[in-house]
Length: 147
Image (cartoon, rainbow, N blue to C red):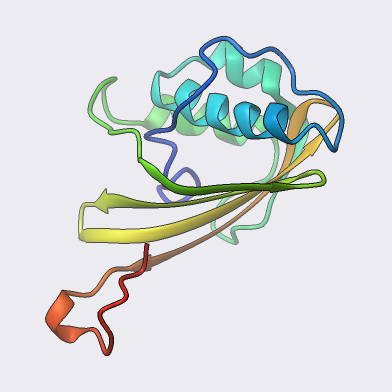
């Protein structure tokens, strides 16, 4: 469950954004996803309840679907303030999708993460994520970096 919100320990922008606009309101959709990360990091269950659909679909195989799974995750998180909001390298929106790409520190070392969120009716409706360990620079076959 720790990878569900790999980056849930962090994000930026819009301190008090309401529900996002329509499917093609790209700035509002980006702000909604950023607000989601901030809400999870700050254990703000009221905001999570407002911005995540009850029938939220999770595509990570080790995490259940449904808003209740996110709220349960918040209950199991380390004490407030122990996580760190990731600094996004990229936030890309197209149609009803928002993609975030960032580096974060995992207990086993740094990881690169890409998460995709689908927005429906101003709420987060669906989530996919891919996380990969970042190898030491000397073990990389190129010098491009993962972020």
